[in-house]
Amino acid sequence: MDMNNHISEKAPRSRFSLTLTTVYVEALDHLVEAGLYMEYQAAIRDALRHLFRFHGIESFSDKGADLENEDFDQE
Image (tube, rainbow, N blue to C red):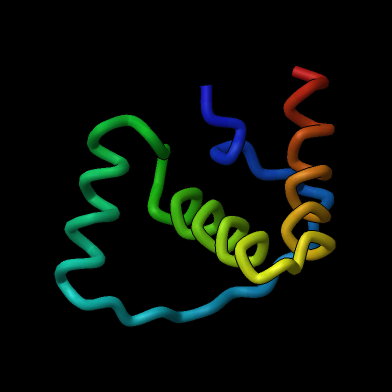
């Protein structure tokens, strides 16, 4: 079960427009079709969390994940 697919309504959000090349869209399609993620957004958010951790920005990557996991645990 991938908890990254569950999004908390408590976490503040901003909307971004993103233009991707075909290779990225096809890769996202593959992840969704394989059932690893429910939608593109979940895969992109997970990739951002990994990117932040890679660069040592734990506070940002953990803040949203903690809120998401709290709601997931209540189900």
